[in-house]
Amino acid sequence: MNSFRHRHRTALGLPALALLIVTTGCSSADDSEPVAVPSPTAKVAELCRNLDRVLPDRVDGLDRHDPEPASALTAGWGSPAIILRCGVPRPPKMVDPEVATGSDPKAIAGAVNGVEWLMEKQDDGSTRFTTANRKAYVEVTVAKGRDTAGMLTDMATPVKKAIPFGK
Image (spheres, one colour):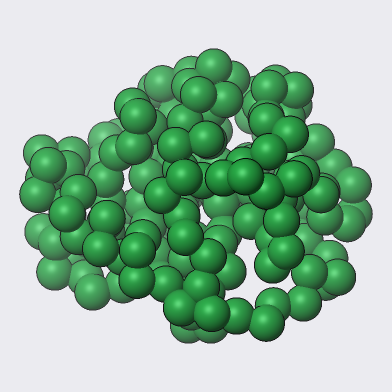
């Protein structure tokens, strides 16, 4: 990825990012469904294994319960689960000019504790966050109704430690 096009708008996007984080509703998601394991390159898979080794046992006060199938490329916390997938492809919205100008109502960019995220509201009401400007894309999906502010804070340190800045 060349650069996160709307990086210069990060400060303007933070209030909107905070608003979307706070305004998610309730869900009855079924945590027993399997999670798709990404298929990254060997280099990215190694970065993801490094991330798995430093992920916390608790995120936003929720215990870690990894999804099936077991993989170092996926992790989960709580129920309904916060699901992390490492080594996903770059989301198309990451280079969408509407996101860059702040005119996409379902996608916002911002940074939390030094980690840049693209936040996308999903049709089912969940929220998907994907890291930007890192050597591997890390996606975190949060069910509708779950507060995400603490989750992003808890994810920042392991992401910074395991996934280097750059492309």
